[in-house]
Structure formats: C-alpha cells, structure tokens
Amino acid sequence: MAKVHELIEQIRQGVYDAAFTHLYGQAHLDAQRARYIEAIKEFAAEYGDGREVSLYSAPGRTEIGGNHVDHNNGVVMAAAVDLDIIAVVSKNDENIVRVKSKGFEKKDVVDLAVMQPQASEMGRSSGLVRGVAAGILQKGGKVGGFDAYTTSSVLRGSGLSSSAAFEVVVGAIFSGEYNDNSLDAVEIAKISQYAENVFFGKPCGLMDQTACAVGSAITIDFKDPAAPVVNKVAFDLAKHGFALCITDTKGSHADLTDDYAAIRSEMESVAAFFGKKVLREVKEEDLFANLSAVREKLGDRACLRAIHFFAECRRAAVLYQDVADDRFDDFLSDIIQGGHSSFEYNQNAYSIKHPAQQGVSLGLAVSQRLLTGKGAWRLQGGGFAGTIQAFVPVEMLDEYKSALEAVFGEGSCYVLNVRNYGAVPVTPDM
Image (cartoon, rainbow, N blue to C red; front, side, top):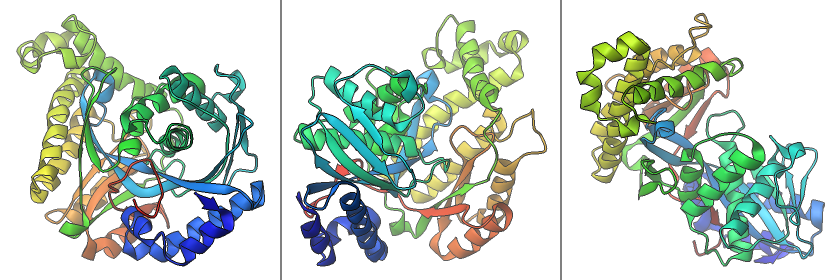
C-alpha cells in the first residue's frame, strides 16, 4: 500500500517489474507499466490523489475440456488467461463501495448497509458487488467500504468470462482489505457464483468463477456441486512453443436460449429414464445396454448428448494428466477429440434454427486446414455462436491470425497464454 504518487514512482522505477513479468510475461512489461500508471492516475482523478491505494488483478478464463457437462455434475478443465481486470483500491470508512470502470460513464455505488438483492441491480455490476459482500458476510467474513477504479482487458462478449473476473476481483479486494487475504480462492469463487445467481439474476455454474479465482489450469469435479473438488496444475505453453488463440466468430447469441437449455434438458431426460436427476448418477454401461429403449423414448440426439457427457468427463481428467505429465502431443490430440465430440455428439456448433449461420463451424474448418498435424482446435463454451479455441505453434501465429481475421474481421483473433495466478493482490514480492 502506498500513496498515489509514490506508487506511480515505484512502478516507473521497476519495483513492480517482477510482479508484472509473473502475470503478463517479459514481452508485455512496458505495456503493463503504462497500463497500471494510467489506472492509478484515473483513480486519482476520480477520488483524489492523497489516498493510499492497493492493486488487485483477476484473470479471464478459457474452457479447455468438459464442454457442457458441469450442469449434470460432470468434470471440466479450464485455465486462467493473461487478459485480466485490474483494480486500484483505497478503503473508506463510509461502508460504501464505489467502483468506476473504464469505458462506463457512471460508477457503481453500493451501500453495504443493505444486503438483500435489489430489483434495480439485476443484470448490473452493482448487484455483483452487493452479492459478493453479502456472500462474504454469510460465510463469517468482514466487509467494508472502498473506492476503486478498474480497467479490463477481458473484453465483454469475448467468451473469456469478463463478469466472473469482475466478481472474483471484488472478492479478492474484500479479502485483502478486510480479511487479511484469508478467503480461500475456491470460497471466493463460490461466493461470486452466489452473487451472480441471486443478486445479478444469471443461473451460471461454478466453472468460470473457479478458473478466474484459482488461476493456472484446473479440473473441477462437480460430483457434489456444494463441495466441488478442484485440482490445479501449472501450464507453460511457451515451453512447448505454443500460444492459445481465441477467435470470436461474430455470431449472435440472440435467440439461442432454447438451444442451450435443450442440451441440459436432454441430458437430464436420459438421467430421468434411469430414475436419476443428472447423468453423473447414471452408469455409462447402463446407457449403452439400454440404448435402443432410450432412443425410442427420447430420440437420438439425447442419446448422443449423453454419450458426449460420459466421454467428455473422462477427457477432462485425461487432459489434466496430459499437462501434469508434460505429454503435450497427447494434450493436442485430446483437445481435437473433445472438439469433435462437441461438434458431432453434443451438436452445439450451430443452431438448427439458423443453418445458414455457422461461424463456429467455419472457424473450425479453417483452423483444421491450417493446424492438422501441427496444433489443435475446438469450439468452447456454450457454442452455437461465439468463440473457438486453438493451440497454435508460435511460428504459425501470424499465418493463423491473418487467416482467421480475413474471415471474421480485424481484431477477432486474440493471442493468449495461460496465467498461473488467480485473483491476487499485485505486490512487488508476489
């Protein structure tokens, strides 16, 4: 913690260079120095330059395996990425949280005397702030007022979970400023999910928040959703000469609610056939032993989506072990298999309501043409529209990026790396 002008001078003198290198890599050091200094100056312009401030960061995330299995208590793999939200923070004694975010005209102002969901805050970041505070209090933690300025490189709508990054950075701030950094990362993730479900009004799962809060690559086993089992492994793509590319295929998510809901409902209908609530409670061999009866009652697509569920849960665990054992070629092969399973069995590459709109499928086709025998590619997230993922050799980055942006527009392909830090205070000794 330091005064505004002191902190700016420390960054200029290189005191934070090691921290920035850990978070973003040596190549981005100058850009991050400038970014943090700009954020501190914006904080001073908004709240005054005499304050003592602290710095916090939380990453975006990408799904690696376990596509559409979390809602049936499956196993997923995800990773934090090196795009993040940063916050310049100073405590206040007013019991009020104020957050001014770059790109937004109005700041969020939340009176912490009120800890119930507010109808006017549904779908707004102020609801997330209030919900995180309420969740911390329910867990026996402490909350209090602070003023913050945030700026995010986790672009909204990029499929990298900008909302989860915001939630967990708020949790990290409360943990650091009022709880001596004692809140566990998984606990912050659960509190963030509660905030999004109850105070924001979005019935999300827990994968996004956990990946952003914990950092690195992780698997999450949702067999008991109230107590998910999280395993973490460091993941160094650069060591293997690869980077992670996320391409926004620019499809519209409008009118896709039914498509998303059908995946969950069809998986659960197969579970119900066996008298269970979710597929995790069904034995895979029972599905195949009764496949004729299941397809007669529920249809072929429900069967295929159930087959995807079982294979994808196994694959998420295998991908984790590939990374842990440093079997990178196996990792690439398993990524491709997961992509095929999502496309062919889970069938969420495009909506059957809009067969002419197949940006995800087209992006995958271009990726396959370029990367066969060299890298890996798959759809990620909800699917039907949105982003695809590729693991690309560094020497092919320019070629790959140019090819995808020729189809989907300049700036549509993001070149990323896995970040081995979750939601953290940014300090010189990290």
